Length: 121
Image (cartoon, rainbow, N blue to C red; front, top):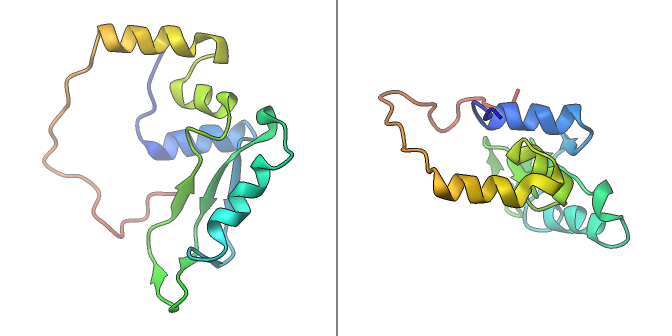
């Protein structure tokens, strides 16, 4: 089992598997963003729920944000969670147990993306 190199790879995997709603239209983070996502938890079967990527976010004062917002990436459904873990839903518990027994040491880097860098494809 591999790992995603970065969040972008995970987002692409969600999209390829039909588990991402990519929202490019302007959305108000204070009044629209969460209610839109919450709608899927009112009547949609668990396996149909998705992660949401909002790429054009502003607030009630009109301030715009360069950083997109990714919501429900791990928690939309077991299927979305399993995509993040790169395993089947039935293997999530076993993969967590293995990870707890064999933690990975952090890797320090000298250069990383900075705030404002376009990371979302």
